[in-house]
Image (cartoon, rainbow, N blue to C red; front, side, top):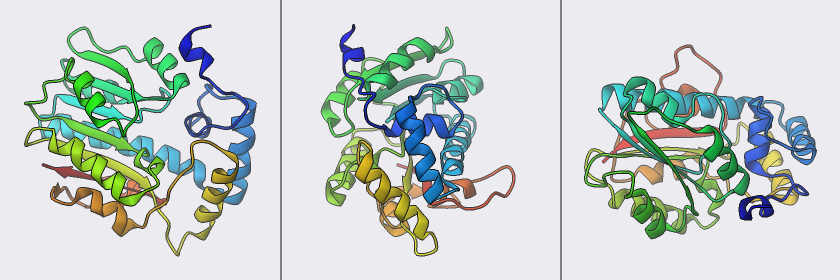
Amino acid sequence: MTDIESRIDTSRPHTARIWNYWTGGKDNYPVDRAAGDQIRELHPGIGEYAKADRLFLGRAVRHLAEQEGIRQFLDIGTGLPSADNTHEVAQRVTPDARVVYVDNDPLVLAHARALLVGTPEGRTDYLDADLRDVDTVLAAAAKTLDLSQPIALMLLGVVIFIEDDEESYAVVRRLMDALAPGSHLVLSHTVTHPDMPDVDAAVAFWNEHGTPKLTQRTPAAVARYFDGLELLEPGVVSCSAWRPETPTPDVAMFAGVGRK
């Protein structure tokens, strides 16, 4: 058994594997499917959040590669490989794009190394690190990415795992401060909203039974991550409302893209 395999805990449901289950993937266990089904009973639309977040990723990466000239992507909190991962979308537009994936979940790392293979012209790498370990992430990413050139920092559904508000803002600021002008922040976050009380119930269930625990924030609190950046239209909105190809219902996962 490898070190990574020894760290995989199949006795408790895990966020990445449940997300994978909701998006139709097969990299999950019975405990994850059972928890996913219970959460879906509390909030029937939760599976659509996962799909909406994935579609937002595709639209944001495509825009940055096509319209903003971004050729480098630092994707922290990668999650399990699915359709249209960051490197696939970016390298479809520009085959020489460089992408570094960062995660500290052993199952994610095992699958990423096997499945996330980029184009011959580009570069794709994977780091075993925690979002909070900013210096470690930046030092390792610099082996693949040129930090003196613009980079898209992808933080989709990952700062929800930092419970303390000020710590989470500080981590995002430190990462963005280290990146060159012209870099972009792409961030999504589960929100608490008076119009969506069943989301709160679903998160409470998860925090009682699953790992790691999640922190919800208000839409205004999510917008704070973009302080000091130029927000691209339409601002911080439901991720399903960020430049969709066709109108879709709002979900309690808010997102935005900001330029440094």
